[in-house]
Image (cartoon, rainbow, N blue to C red; front, side, top):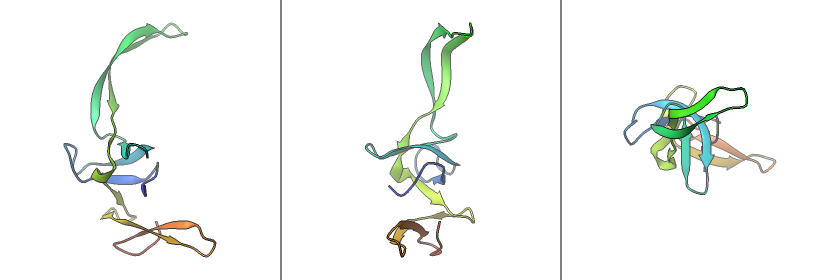
Length: 104
């Protein structure tokens, strides 16, 4: 997968189409990414008392993962781009923008 944690992405499909956000988590096995502020769902948790005595639980709003194919990386100029990979002189993979050809 060519999108990494910390990248800024644009959602290109689904109910949150057009939103941008930072990638919080990447699940390579299931080909899914979690994006900040995208695909927010209600999660019901049992109310419990923490060690400090505060009540924790209830209905929380959290980000759920979305399919990797539904996001595109945003380049430095805030336009969506595809990603290519090339090898440098030392054999390391470097991500480049297919639109501009610049390193990401």
